[in-house]
Length: 544
Image (cartoon, rainbow, N blue to C red):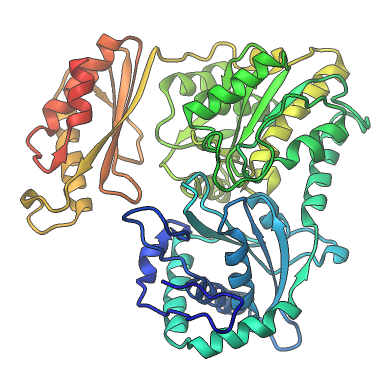
């Protein structure tokens, strides 16, 4: 499909598009760059323009705006190679709908939300709505959109509404009209350096916690790995003004081909890269971000990782010092050892909910609305949101909480270096074996009998639940919001249906390989008669 180019002689193709297929939960995702076999481009510039115009229409309705005030929308993007052309297309769509556009250029997802709450006329803030162009850690050819108002990120229902509007707008497009909007839009776009405001706020947050000391991290050696995403600012714009040494930081330059490793704190190669950087540079701490900086993780001076359960444990320890007894909301795949740590060691409450960062954050908000105090909602993926920070999943702010701890410990004389952080997770029980296996459902298999993969997956889970209840060696989790979770053989398993795909992910944690295999065999015995379920990954695991 041809893209809209700056040349009016270029043919503009308006092929039929199924906008519904672009929805990915509370985000929009698609293929924006040609060249990968089997992945045709479906996030073209006209499609993008229609989506942006639809968001503008949605926003006008949401804000109940009258003609006396033009609404403002900020636009930012990560380092992807399709970012610039999509930013321009988004801008045209917003202007087409009669709203003002402010481009931020390279930015982080959390900064885009912050622009809806910042009070600063010089930077044209607050804006009424915000769009971040990103596809998180997905491959270079993908891209997508996240949307914000001052109430937070949009939900699944909002995205469905926007895509329905976009389909209707797209049907009315003409090649001539798109060329005309392209020629008239550029003169109406405003541009500001909002990231300087955002980073300044992060710096001031650390200084304030340390008693308004100008350089509270002076002498600390902290290395950053941005994975060539949008997070390279953290070294020069946050750590260095606070006095930290950042030599040895790596992959800070934006490069949308991600030549060094996937910018993903869950990726083992990425975590090895930041760990090696810490050890090679004898640094006090390492920090790593995903592409758009809404997720993060850390590494202490000995090379021990703070990600997944360990990051949740560390953040829980910090938050529970500030808010004793509060409820920590997590996703469903957190460990039993984490529950024990939060409840027995830290004196908090652990509310294990569903997968999906939006699910976890929304549950934290819901608990507070029914007078159950919660100050932290965090997923094993590295999405972490704090009540004090608008319930925004901000990877940079999460790391600021760690920096606050380092700075305040030094000022109070209670400790130095990353040992301050490592000591906070002392006592966390960690499994010897932790695996995730993906059991795929063949949607074309006759065993589905014409039903959906969701119906088939639910049937698998129901059968496993019944089998688990009758097995004396397994104990079904008394409180569980997703899939089937059971304890046994010193460990646990969770089988659940993926949020978006025809897959049943199986998580197993156990004190030994032998015990993990026993848990795997229990699941295998229960699901073996569901012939449309590909259990090859589980078969291989129990054989090894």
